Image 1 (cartoon, one colour):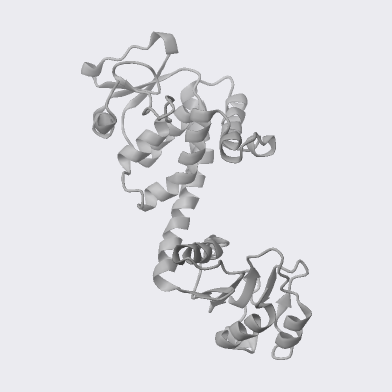
Image 2: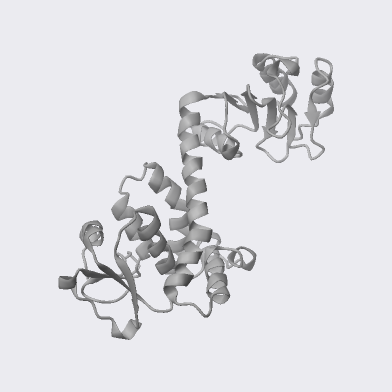
Length: 305
C-alpha cells in the first residue's frame, strides 16, 4: 500500500487514478475533491474490484482499492480503515485551522463515519435514525445513482459532486470566512446570564454567535449564557434565548420595552424579542434603550433564573 505521506505528490503527478466500479459515497467524494477542489489533471479509470491493475511506471495510482500501488485509507485503532476522502483532505490541507479544512469538516465527518461505521446516526447517536439517514449524504448519493442508473460511474459521481458536494463546500467555506471576519470585527462579551455580540454579523452566521459564546464560557469555566443579545447597526438590537425554558415575551419585559419604543417585536413562540431583525431591520436608536440599559433590564428580570 502507498504511504499516506506520499499521496499528495503522487496524485499531483498522476496520469490516471484507478477506482473500483460501482462507486460508493467515499469514491464520489474523493473524485469531486480531486477534480474540483484541488484540481488535479489525472484521468479517472474504473476497474472491477477483483481485477485491479495499476502500473506506477505509467503514472497510475489507485484509491479505495486493495493493491500495492493504491491507498485504501489509513488503519484505525479498531482495525478498520478511514475513508479515502479523509486521507485526501488531510494530505492536501494538513492545517486543521485552515478555512479549507474547516469547510470540509462537515463533509469529511459524514463520509468518513458512513464509510467506516456503516451508519452515521448509529455511530453518533447510539441508534440508527432513519429520519436523518434517509436525507443524509449517503441517501443523496444513492438517489443520484438511481436517477442516472443508465450512466457510468464517472458521470454519476460528477453530477453528484457538482450538484450536492460543491454547493455544500462553497457554503461552508463562506461560513468559515464570515466566522473569521466576526471574530476580528465584533465584540463578544459574557455578562452573567447574558452572552453579547456587538457588531455587524453576516446572515450566514445565524446560530453561530450563541454557540461561540457558550464555548467561550466553557473555556473559562463559567456557566453558559442563557440569553443571546445582539447589537448590529445593520439589523438592530434584540435577544434570542439560549435556554429553552426562557420566554422572551415575558410580560415584565414587554412592559419595560414598549414604554420606551413602539418598534419592539415579541415573537409569540417566546424565543425572540427584537427591535430589528435580518428580515425587518431597524435603526438601533429606535430601540429606545442603549445596549447597557438593555443588559441591565434583562438581568433584573431574568436573573437568577
